[in-house]
Length: 256
Image (cartoon, rainbow, N blue to C red):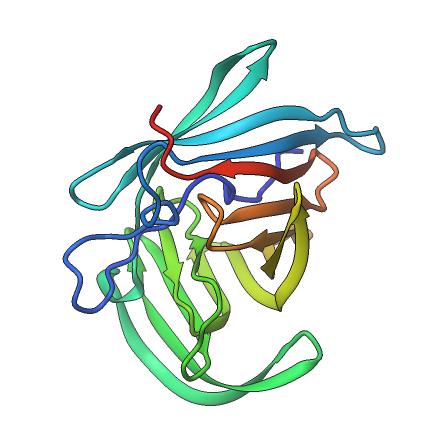
């Protein structure tokens, strides 16, 4: 069965912040040539993971704020290209969405319940009905990150005040829901000799077609703004396949 999880790992969403003329992506704050090194494994069923050495390189920063990145695999002493990506995306205010409702709602973050402003947007993307819900906290300082839109090459920027987000896309009798939930804000993960406090976030993707059982897949990622592309660790629960990433080192400012 083909995984329904979107490609969350190497793309960074672009956002149009208030007062800014350019988009921003998860790589925008790093200089061209920044690199993230990581161990990668993709396993099927109950097989033991076969780890590969990979890296993602920021190849180009464009004038409009978009970035081109490339993932490479180590073969002997050489690095060979696996895939490339153009980081593009939108902020809610630049999408074809209208503010539908704002209301208070409490959300649990780890063991703590926080008071949020729940903001609902609704609109159309081509022929699909689209709904975006953001749960925002005042003066948020958590790591900015992205959420995939599905059926779209762009991502949605989740700003530092968003502790939960949900996007629902309806196409006739098919509904796809993708939800991001913050589990912890300061989960320690060790990279080489350093320990980074990471944002731990769970992504749940549910595909529902009328007349068929729903398919749900869950992944967890750990993010830190010091790491190019933010990704420190990633784990999916899919058995076809299960993907794992673990950052081993990173470089900032090395020209490639």
